[in-house]
Image: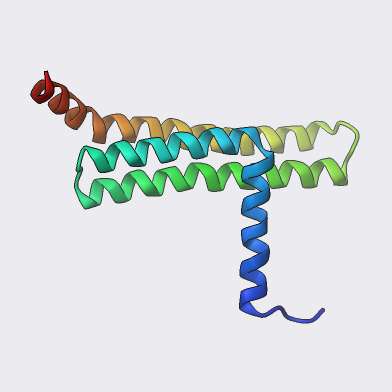
Amino acid sequence: MEKRKFHQSAWLALKGIASGISKERNIKIQMVIGIAVIVVSLLLKISTTELAIIISISFLVIVLEMLNTGLEKLFDILRPDYDRDIGKVKDMIAGAVLMSAILSIILGFLILLGPIIDFFKTSF
């Protein structure tokens, strides 16, 4: 197999991201939530470090969801009939996505709750 040039690999990776976003409901939902939280974070003018944490955790959730989706599709191709062990693996990967989503909610509250309260105190 011939080795791809960097720009070819990058193009294929971008196509994979676009495919995930356009075809997968959970990725769309996580993208919308992630963008909304980042916009709110920017409007609240949180620190650069806090913004970096918000952006990082938002990306982490989406990356894990893309891995989960890709692996589920691969398992479905390799074993079209139900396989209990593959089912357990799929559940664990989905659990990793859920744990990252829970972490993102916790971090979001820890970082944004104070600035949101301050915003409402000064606005009303």
